[in-house]
Image (cartoon, rainbow, N blue to C red):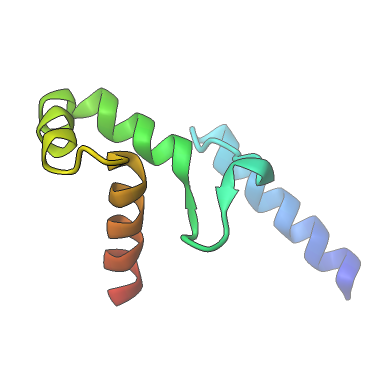
Length: 78
């Protein structure tokens, strides 16, 4: 029943964390876009700083929000 499902879910989470997965906080999750905004933006800005600078010049009005919406739109196509 429900108790077994919860135990199974917790075991999966423990295994994922043990292998390097980061557990997100619900408060950082954007349900509308289905993304952890801070994680996605941090990853792109840290790993691709030059491209991020170019992107910011293309979309000077709130590049972060534009990028998040663009990624979410692409992911929803899959």
